[in-house]
Image 1 (cartoon, rainbow, N blue to C red):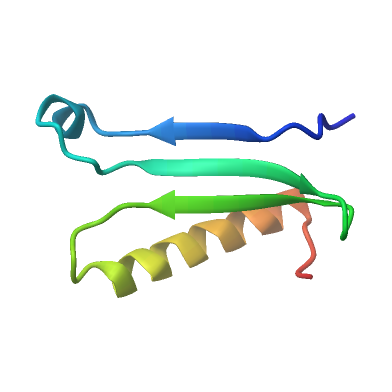
Image 2 (cartoon, one colour):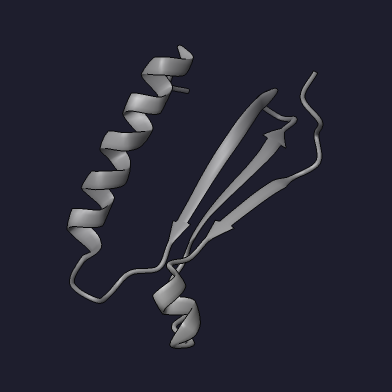
Length: 74
């Protein structure tokens, strides 16, 4: 059974940590009672001008994950 407490995973490149950059990617998994489903929120800090490429990358990867998990779009 899924625990309804939020789960947060945060990753950063070692070079960013060592140089005090604030770049990281965070995965926040929560349970939304109103739709009775798990919600995955991805936060990725990137360089200005990389927004479109990064959005396409995440969209493609999330679609692959949803396919593997058999998740329906809501």
